[in-house]
Length: 179
Image (tube, rainbow, N blue to C red; front, side, top):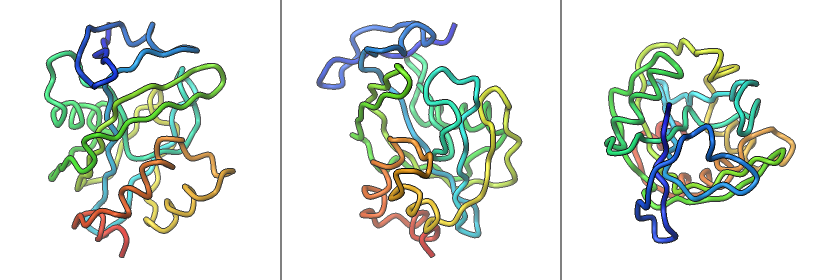
């Protein structure tokens, strides 16, 4: 059974819970992460969440999201999820937004996460797991930014919030994606 780390309002761990039981109409704050992966050509790997996901099915979003296991190093958790969801590995991985946090609801399921954001350089082509990822496509940063600005694009609420913060950063991987 996959577990998530529960947090207090200050972001300090206060326990663990089974992931399957955490997400509902009133989700306790817990630890997660988001990752934006680009290839050597500066393309961003964008994914559409599987229709079988309990939270935010079929929304387009960043490369991958997930939850570190209790005691798991965050960078190791990102690499694990890239492999599990997409069959791909980061050759470079950097934490760029350590304090990002959000709440969002859809269809009676709430996310309530402290969600540090990583950027990664990816090598190879993804091989998505259908129970995790419905679709995976390489997009330009401009296309992704436009989707974040368009309320009807189907982009995840966390990605919409993260895009302007990422745009404000002077990160070389993001600069390559921006062209």
